[in-house]
Image: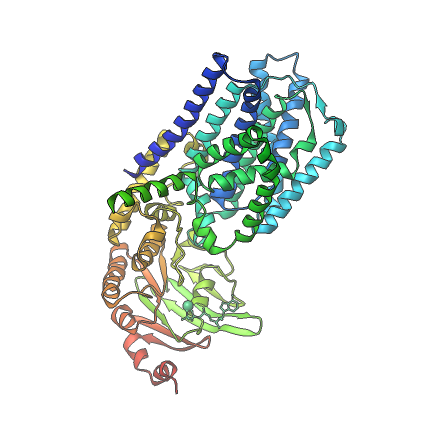
Length: 329
Length: 252
Ligand SMILES: Nc1ncnc2c1ncn2[C@@H]1O[C@H](COP(=O)(O)OP(=O)(O)OP(=O)(O)O)[C@@H](O)[C@H]1O
Ligand SMILES: [Mg+2]
């Protein structure tokens, strides 16, 4: 019974994404999509991938990290350098997926290198160290020669499109959702809810923390590769802490521990400032407020109880319950 | 040889000797009580036995194996499970998932099998569900399996914590004030359940409790702690009638 509810919930999430994809595809095919809209599709999709994967760390594992843009950048450079090298040799259908896998795996390696020493830290300390990691990576890339330095990396084939992004979104959704609903995912959530109790049951905390970190890093890396294949020039400066904070804001607003919430929030947060120019001015203000609130609330026990419960979906349920209560009364 | 052998156990926090020279030996199948006034060091003994704190001195042996200085994870794998005085459930997770987390090291499949929802994932998950439900039944919680743990009433949360600990198939179960916050009715029920668990699962149980009716009712042997040192230990009736124990409890 419970399993069925869960499956239906997940299927609805997949359904929302597929329906949105079909709707936009029809707009594009019938020539009703403005160029402006078309240019927004890949960035929106990338933010979905980034937010859903970051949610594994922030929402399910319950750790605050600000290094997601860092993983995205190492993935982007690894995948794009590979693609440039083999641009003439391999056909796109082979090269691009291979580049994504390479970018993802390189991000994984960095996830392990950073994760092993850093995951002992808690709360704000982890946030600060991962933030520093992102910034260090960025300055290293800017100062290296083979990455194109400050002027950026040119020559990546522009293979990204809306359809590929859709496929990767679906893979991300299925992998993260399935993981969360498996033995490993339960262990990850148990660390969030009560680390000491998890240890008392013999659950290997370090292993599962690292697992969450590495899987999230993989998808951030893949998103980076797609990003690099969407532009004529890849610049390290875009992977700064603002980018990490933007992804975190999406996760927080969408609801920590809610995959569907991350998807919906990614669309809104990415599209809204583009559509309503006046909102763009408030963007940084909203980010700052969310970040400060997270820092203050993070680690408070009361707040921990609500992690994984407040989300956009929950808001709908709340409204629905209110409505039905009104009707009943 | 006793199942749990504690010798000369001690710990100090800064200058405070929270526990000093504590000895106990708990025979297999025994229901053993650990009592004492507030702040006597009972929970601290549990924390040392389960590896939450490292003892400053002394040794802990389970079934002849030295557990001194091992961490919580290793100690659970060696066969000790526990509950906590201030309930520590996975509050955002379902009642069923809480128990399934106790089964984590009993029924296993790989991360990849989980991600691909392979056949073995489905089989093992089903096995886990059935096992977890059968444990919940012992505590009369099977109908609430789908509730969020934090939505259970207090008494049931305590029971769920015991169920979760049992799921790890321990040799020794440590209960820290299992009846705290329960009304006399619930306490009576709990006493039956604890006895049932001992008989049905062939369990050895060490419990901390302030409710003397429960202690006198189900514990065969007890130890009394006072200011971190052992005041008395032995058969329950004898110890409870010991004048030193009575003064410690009633004050002078
Ligand atoms: N981590 C710690 N740091 C410092 N002091 C501690 C720590 N843990 C326990 N203590 C102290 O050790 C003493 C014993 O505490 P403990 O919690 O074991 O008492 P208890 O017998 O379980 O009491 P109660 O019946 O109130 O639960 C207390 O004085 C307590 O303040
Ligand atoms: Mg105590």
